[in-house]
Image (cartoon, rainbow, N blue to C red; front, side, top):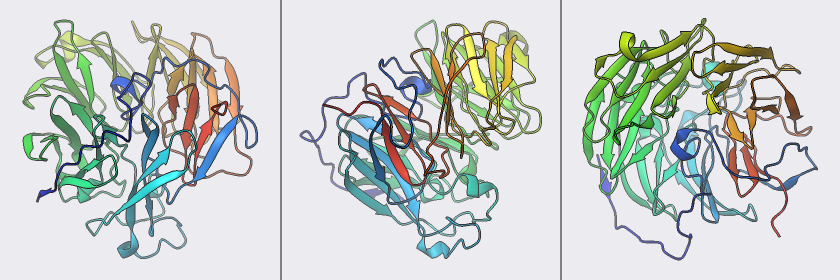
Length: 424
């Protein structure tokens, strides 16, 4: 059911979106790449911290930045402690707005879930929680996805414009996919909720199209620009990598992909899609977009039986970088042919790496769940530049870091950190 409210135009709160704004999961084009300079290499509890703010709840979603505001999501009331998960009826999600320069919380809006949610087991969903989807914005509105509780459009003060559901199912691993904007559409991978890919009119919330086949898919779709000027929407699902027309939802092509559930999001560079994934044996592959039908033989460029189960890749200067989430191995692939340039175990042992890497200033930032951030040179030779930890904070961290104004915004279950030189 869709609920409509008056649309508020907020013109005095935020500046016009500029290139430095980080407005969706993994930034511009979902690439995880920043062109910022002056990005910090090293930090600790006391050094190179501009500010840190205790958040009103846990969460593994990433922050986004629009003008002088930061937006992110949290959850509280349930599923925070494996020994005492609490009462599901007390679960609350929040959309939180912070002042970019000071880190102070400007407002926090609660959202009651549609119950029952996935039951907290202390196992797999304990590694994700109930707030994994990253917000996105068109500069005027916020769009957030809360699994079976639905998709919300808010104004920049957190007031609801519309709300609609995209499916009723849950899974023990929770829901993680983030919304993507294309023209007048909000596109959501509702694999858990309805095994579909759903496009909504961003003004009204009305369904524009729906495509099936989203089997065991926990990743965010990526928009891929083709050489002829067209755009395709690509998503990884169990067994297949799929390409769609983002305007109509028509499936354009498919290529044999990850044989098991598909968690990492794809990325693209010059019309080539790179994706990794797989349970047990991981695979990494490259597929040229723009084909039609089954393109496994015609458009798959290479496929290697190495990769990551959860964390997505990042591209730089002809190389693909990623980290195996459970093995703690950093990989570098030649993006042209898939040759493994290096595979090196990170030390000290990182534990799980569910966050996807971010690249800035020819450095790759890998965030582990409980053992800090490993910074590697983005070059075809393994070189650990820094390992940054907080001695007094080992809270779970699955969120991707955000690069903005030469600083790093790093979020975990307790705090949002602004890392780098203090403004002014």
